Each structure stands twice: as structure tokens, then as C-alpha cells.
Amino acid sequence: MSRALDRLAARLAERLPPDTERTLLRLRSLRSGRPSIGLPPARRALVLAPHPDDETLACGGTLAALVAGGCAVRVLVVTDGDGAKVDLTPDELRRRRRAEVTAACAALGADPPSFLGLPDGDVAAHVPALAERIARELTTSGPDLVLLPWFGDEHPDHVSVNHALADAATTAEPLVLAGETWTPAPITRLVDVTAHEAALRAAVAAHVTAAASFDLEAMLGLKRYRSVHGLRGRGFAEGFLAAPLPDYRTLVDATRRRG
Image (tube, rainbow, N blue to C red; front, side):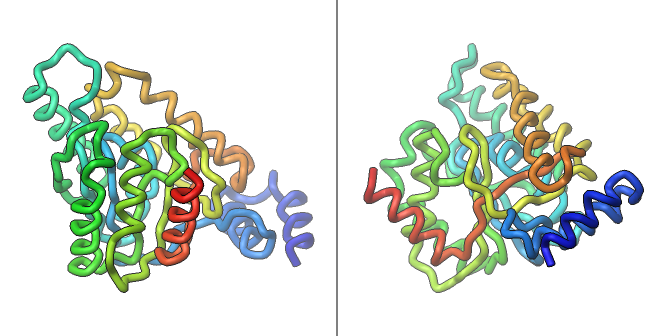
């Protein structure tokens, strides 16, 4: 079946309207062993952003797509990103970064974020307390999806947030969508975010302070590249390592033991 769909997609690629072709590609992905294409159904989503801007860089287009589909998106910002190397006082830096992530969430259609204020660069020292907070969030809000940067990302705070999610004592089993920021992941799901490019770019532009440290526009390059995997290089896609929380916990714990 997958070979037939492959041949049909290749034969009709130049003749199909864009929406029809995307549907065909999505159907093909279900049978091909490649990353699944499309948003999983969800009424509520919880985003764990280690820093202001991770909600946008790891999964901003997907958040906009979720909101457009009627999903309520709650963003939990773990640190204030006040370790950024910019010429501002710590208080002013915290104020600006909180305002910027609030503006980014508004651009994506998400609810105003909540802030935990853990120390930037030292989340590892607060994993138990963060795990308790995440467990409460999972219990009280009952999200269908949890989104965060994946556990192999090359930032210690990102790794620590994954440890806290794995340690969260909960019977909830949401689907985890672990996205990419600093390090590409072994993705199992692609979300076509082409229709939400404007919202994604507006959210990126909101993070003025982070852009003083590095060019955030470069991060969009990975989303363009991911479109090659299932959209024939057209538009933008976000890639995720997707797994139910119990399975994701097993992956995190295995890498933690190796480390």
C-alpha cells in the first residue's frame, strides 16, 4: 500500500492543488514507516518552555495550529532567561523577557504564560521541585499533549526539564511532543505549519532580547529543512520525537543512566 501511495504521490505531485497533495502525503506517511504527518487530536496542551523563546523555537507553529483547531494551550516558562549576555540589569532583563514571551504567546494564540522563575542555567538543582509542579499541572489541567524541547537537546536546562517531566509522579499519559531547538531529534512526527508562518514569524520577532544574542531567524531554517521529510520541501514543518509519557519517561531515564 505504501509503495502505491508513493508512486501516486510522485505521479500527481505537480498536478494536485497544495491542500490535496498535503492530504495525500499525510495518508502515505501512515503506511510508510516514515514520520507521521499531522496534528494529533487534542483539547488541551501544556508547553514546558525552559526559557522564554523555547515555546516558539521548539513548537511555535504547532501551537498556532493547535489553537486554530480549538485546542487550549497553556505555556509554563521555567526560567526567565536572565542568563542572556546582554547589557541590561538582571531585573530589567527578566522584565523584558517575560514581556516578550507573553507577546509571543499572544501572536501564537496561546494563553498568557505562567512563570516559575527558576535560575537560568541551574534548573538541574531544582528538578525535584519542578517535577512536583509538572505533576500538579498534569493532574489539574489534564492535557492531551505535552510539548517541550527533546531530552537530547544541547542545553543543560532543556535536559533538566526533561528529567523533571520523567520524574513527575502522575498517572496521566498524555502524548509527549519533544521538539527541536539546538539539536535535531530522531523525529517520529511532522506537523505542517506552513499555514501559520506569519504567526510563527511574529512570535520569533517578539523575542527581541534573545535576538541580541543570536539570530533567531536562523532557527527557522530547521523548520524549512523538515518540510523536505514529508512535504516535498514546500513550506515549513516542525519535527518531534513523539511518544506517550510512560514511553517517553523510559527514553529519558535510559539516556540519564548512560550519562
